[in-house]
Image 1 (spheres, rainbow, N blue to C red):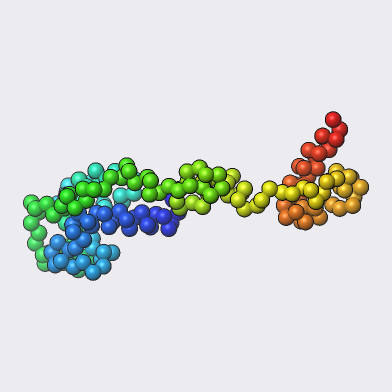
Image 2: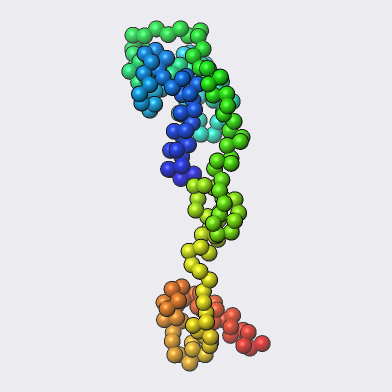
Length: 188
């Protein structure tokens, strides 16, 4: 997963998690900047993992962890840790009904698209379905018609393999392979 895609995934996941807390601080109601909202475990001894580490964790397990938390703004979070704010640790602040419609199993249709080169299914984040398709799309099929007598041209030293390669905008090895293939055909 590319960095850009990972960042997008994390932002989407955090927005979804915040939705269960009505996208606001449960203490002061702050809701201007979602990146300023954080999760605080009501009972640290029941904490199984930090909610910033949700990349490879199933949504049902994340929901169970969110039930042990409260969503607070950065300021309220610091005040909780300083002991300035007392929390009701028996109350569940996470509202599962606010995230009821999310089903991670049916999200795959959003991430896939059709490859413009071959028509196969591909990730939306990728331009082509495979490296092979990307190579085909970059360069059209070579037109060897420019050099109908390739073997003669090279054998008679009219042009070197390197000059032909430069002219066709391919590697010299590609020309050499073509030369060897044609030479074999001429021998047979």
